[in-house]
Image 1 (tube, rainbow, N blue to C red):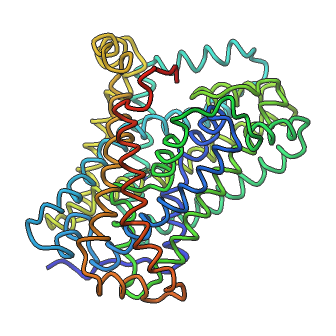
Image 2: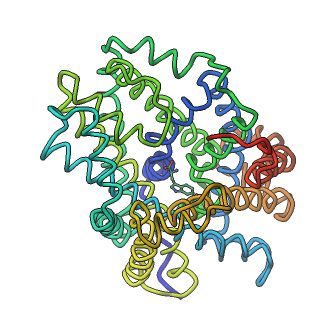
Length: 464
Ligand code: TRP
């Protein structure tokens, strides 16, 4: 067989890598606008409950599977059940989901990188809000530009994953994550000194229940899944590089807490800046790429802050992208015996190609406007990008999370599960509660999300 399995150099290295996977575009770009769209306060509380009662138990289950089996998802599920078990479908789902998610994620990450470049070379100062909005519209529709930055971003991701666990993923997580925290802190301090801080704060944490909808709870749960990187084996894979006696419980708590803190702080950075510039009511996807540049164009020091913001966004995306690529790569290394170099090049290259249609989705062509028109019957039309996003976000992650919870709660033997949970931790008392959450709360919550995805809860139709 191949060489001995690679392991993280230290517990902190694992925590930074797992937090790097979790903290991503979902936190800095997604969470603030989703929170705004759902009316703040109450949504935030429900989000926290979803993280604690559904996300955290699944995170522990994923890391448990990986650490116990010392194998990536396909092999891990096999060794905890039996060869050719139907549960292995969970492992296959992971590999497919890694391809799909990273293919569109790489496109948005590419925009972030492009905006780092743009904010340094041209800056936004001196541009009117209309010009900034038009600039994003033009960039979004520029097929070649999108493809180019997607390819640049994917090349960077490949170059990290190819260097391996310790020398690649862990090393870069140790560099990028502390830098990200530092940049966030700079922006937070700045945000707190702006005149819009109070208004921004109350926009995020105040109870604007008029915006709270029946489906807000399900938005919160879906967002928790995505933000914590759950449901497709990313944390099974990262867990498989932990030594078998490492504490799962406290590391999961730390990773979830860091992820949640970054999401809340990102919202607290973004809204004060927007309110100060008189743009507070923004609650859509244009928030990061339009409203933020507009705000910075009007603020003292904005020329320096815009590159900081987009660098933060890029670093967040990069450490998430490497975890997605590692899932696909680890499969070919562990199951097919490929070298890391070959596995990374082939999977990374494949994802690069699969991402091209997503990169072209802002344009008028086959994967953009034309596909959207052809799929009018489905949720008002979807581009290739939208389809990739919806299949993975609405279907694969919830199904994967449900599968992982069910597998650990009902299929893995009681003794192995209990011993695995309690190994290396002082928090063994939480075992009983963890199993109950996996057995009952997680399935109920996920089934509600899936019913929501097929439209059961918005029969009346809603605009969002
Ligand atoms: N959690 C990341 C974010 O918030 C995205 C991500 C990375 C992810 N790995 C994942 C999402 C695995 C789902 C599954 O942007």
